[in-house]
Length: 330
Ligand code: UDP
Image (cartoon, rainbow, N blue to C red):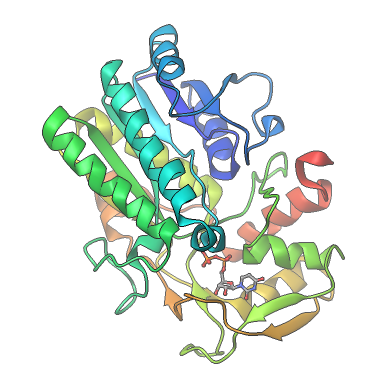
């Protein structure tokens, strides 16, 4: 398998995955509508189509002209708070459009898809680490939309023979180690980029959303996974699609977690800046702890995280942001 279509390849996780695919000798074609992605994240060597995943004639043309053999499907809306404000939009953009997209792929003869799912499908877990067979009870429309797609894939497999892998990401973070590409969201909501923006003086302080959680220091614990480790997981998933005879879901995380306070302390050390902290109210729907059980992907795909130490995560994100304080507008 050589020719891979990456939807949402100009986005944060997509663009890092594209770079790693190219390094490994894949021939990569990107389809992106640039609603949230950045053309600059792709570089000139990548073949790029501007457009929507629901545009059937465009998708069929790409599949045919580029002899596409498999797809990595990142394109989605992914801001949790936004999904609560306008659930209909998320169900259209994520669920309905993916439904149409996958039907187009099958029509064009492509039956292999790696899908970016999320730990948000677990909702508030009963215990951690969370295995793949834990109860899935998402607490926001974003998580519901991703779970619906996993379920859709199950039926597309039974009825049409779709071959699929869904990767349930925990907290994606970090950047290309040389700082050449990184995270740039117009509406930034994630902890690590916001902490580093505070270090740069782009905002006065970092809000800590609650310090009375059931954790040792009272702040929420999350499982942060370096974006390059995520990229590698997609490639391992692509290879497994060649021999897989059944759709499968994998958690992608490290199996251990850091609290919000720990993240801020490490960022202070790495940046050498004084980062002002402001205690704020809890954010709706934040569980105390989210940590992945990662035995399944380690055992079945021989995947291991290599870049997900917190120093590497924050160090690479800092390299990117300090070189590009305005992101791709720098
Ligand atoms: N968080 C915080 N301040 C911020 C952003 C996030 O305290 O400005 C906390 C948030 O409550 C959560 C953790 O940091 O416990 C990670 O949040 P993020 O939005 O990065 O990822 P999520 O876990 O929501 O996917």
